[in-house]
Amino acid sequence: AVSHFKEADAWTYLSDLDVLTLKKDISPLLPRNSLDESAKKFDALTLTIELGYLDKEVDASRSIQRVKLIAEKLEEMGTLPQVQAKIGTIKEVLSETAWQNLSLQWLEKVRKDLRDLMKFLLGDKNKWFVVDIEDVISDNGEVEGVTPKVSYRQRVMDFLAANRHLPVLDKIYDMEQLDMDDFRELERILWEELGDKEEYDQYTEGKPCGSNVAILIRSLIGVDRKVALQRFGQFISGAELNAEQEEFLMTVVGYVCENGDITKEIVVNDPPFDEQLEVFSNCMIPLSRYIDNLHRVVMPSFAQGEGSMSWAAE
Image 1 (spheres, rainbow, N blue to C red):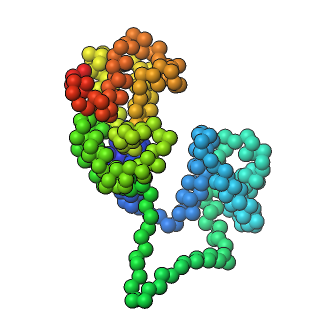
Image 2: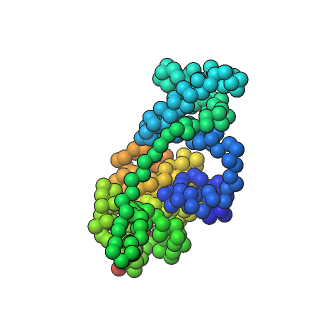
Image 3: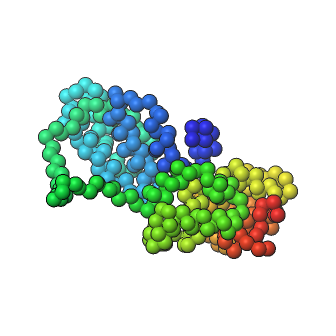
């Protein structure tokens, strides 16, 4: 995992499995500095707001309210020289006008100005928390242990993290054609070992994968982006891609990583592909074959008989 994330390309796209690996395997290796822990928490808070500014699907309303609350607490401590030095920024945070004219530059200013003041907020030590736990009483003095409930998705993610280099997973990551044994193995894992078909159906409801387990797995682990570019070269006989074409292909690969699959219909009709498709006007047929192959390698109908079409065959 360390070797993988040392490469800059590994950070171009982070799959769900990459995020889990960073949390479970990489983060425990990082040195901990308790002296600036509160400042780091404020960094995370403001960075969430910045992400919400860039991506409207991210709800940062709670983070905004917390930053405002922090500013209120700091304003009450205005007699401290360090706080007084940043009182202008604190008052801006408490002003609705500033939030109405939000910008990344201003959010960064807030983060940098206030992060070192977090150490003055020692918290309210008068809070009480009530935990109501119902005891299980038995006549023979034995009680059942507590069994934490793990969601189906978490079971799948834990399995993928622990078995990242299972041969069938490597084939999906490297975009190699799956055979029927691969599909049966994935179905056994997802429909029997990690849960049942009903749990799978509930988890994948509304997802593009449907009952295709390979598409679901590809949406969780992604694909090797370097291999993806190299493979396209097999369709254009070694011709060089220009910058726009390479960017287009990376958008295609990013879509596959996020959704698990792609088809020619999506590329032709859906944004952002339809607006940029003209960059491949000189080699549309190779692009079409490439998209077909991305789709076919995770299709059971192409995993058997003469319908199978591997990269080598192309």
